[in-house]
Amino acid sequence: MATALVEIRVAAWRLAAVATLTIGPAHAHLAQGDVTGGWVAGFLHPILGFDHVVAMVAVGIWGAQLGRPAIYVLPITFPLVMAAGGVLGVLDVPIPGVETGIAASALVLGAMIALAARPPLAVTALIVAVFAIFHGYAHGTELPAAANPVSYAFGLVVATGLLHAIGILIGTVRAWDWGATALRVGGAAIALMGVYYLIRAWTS
Image (cartoon, rainbow, N blue to C red; front, top):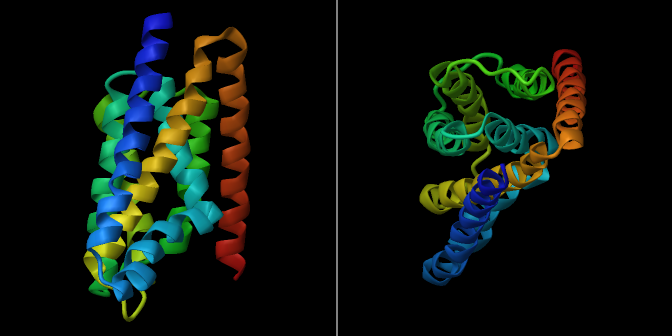
């Protein structure tokens, strides 16, 4: 268990380190307009939206709770599919119920953590991928008019990776007896947030 915990923490820190180290080179090679309206806008967008933060951290927690290979598959699946959803948003391809899908992501992912659910890896990845489309679409439709789509998408992916890494680090508490219970309680709290977001989406 101790070895597995170390590997999980190393994986999370590597993800965070790679994302962080790419900030400097990307920032240095972007025009000023891309920095203010592209990369920075993309990076801040998921971080400033708490519904996005909750879902992305939940992906990391669930991956850590499931262990290998899910701990690697889920944080890779979400950003990749989210990018595809972002393209659909930029192209203004109609997708119904986006806000409902985002809210449902917190509810479902939180419930999976609370129940310590362990579906087959393909089903787990599919659940994450479906919700990633909604999150990506919302980001894509809110692309600033003057922003470079490539730099904006890069900022989104970096921020998402960092949020997943935070979730993985939180999930490492499962190594202790109290930690497994704490994660399930945290999952229930995330699910309740999802209920709140659903109500807000349906009544707004």
